[in-house]
Image (cartoon, rainbow, N blue to C red; front, side):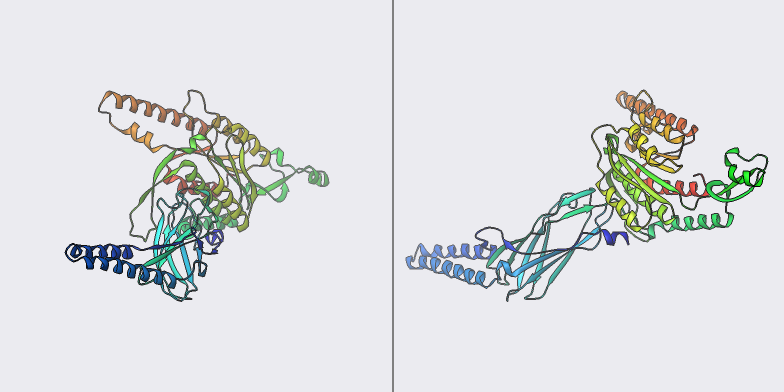
Length: 474
């Protein structure tokens, strides 16, 4: 499994003192001390009874001191944090904390695991009972909300004996860099697409579609209507008659995933996360940036394309090129791509689309399938990204995906009840109409265009990829 090879390594540390005096009274001790002051009430009538308060409080403090001395020293405790799977968007990550007590006393612990805000919104507080020389374990789950690299903090422990008259404070340096990945689809979730991919592969093997691809298959006599560019002049010279090359559909094709990391991809949209088919939990809304949704789609397409035998490359760009990965195969190549997608960051400025087009044409001179996930800027002129797409169409098969803004569609479809809403609705309808016209014109030039909501992005792109494979368009 991919997620198993991406999960962070376990980390272990011996506990340290939080401060110079890592010792204190508990709420029970303070309550007993306050109870001693009740003996002052009869002291108003009998003066000797007032000294009973001092005797009581002294006994409580002595008992608390002896109870604290029975507690294991801070250095006798060690903690370990283990990750059961890779942290990824739209999924839960299970964390196991192990506390080892080398002392002689049973301790009741209150543990605070300091994790970054990308993993948890509030600090994780857990309670644990640790027996002497027996590892105590607890597990809890977190739901990552942001991609990227994040630093985990210390583990803070407050522990006491069963008497609970005194407690010690300790901390363990469990700091490590944790990488949160895009949403990782399991094999079970992609069974339909994988089954369709196998079916297409079998059909292509049986049909051996000649003339559609560019892989050399054989030579034959020239026939009327054959393309003159396919004539093999060396074979023609040897045989004294026109000989033409015969091609078949490529078994392995390059697929490039191009991600726009400009300002338009920073906008956050809410998408309904569909649970597994056998789950009884309802769909939950998840708020991610458009770039997060694009990266999750890129991972799903890379998995399917590599399974289908194609080579997959990556180009992520903003004002400059953030990451590039030449087409390749294999699990190591997929892991490298997922690592790069986890580090992709949206920039506050407009992306340089023409520069990305130039770089891509230089890296991929031969015909390939290009998946370009971007968005269209609202401008009176033709967006620059369309000019870049037209350049790619001269050489490649382009699947151009524009991510829609659901809020704009809701405003355009809503029925206005006042003047302000009327103008808002008119503006939204004009934006939607201009967007539809731009994509229609790009489609007329030969591009495959999609205008999708975030929740439909992955499934639509995978279906379109399989359609391209089935029709041998590359």
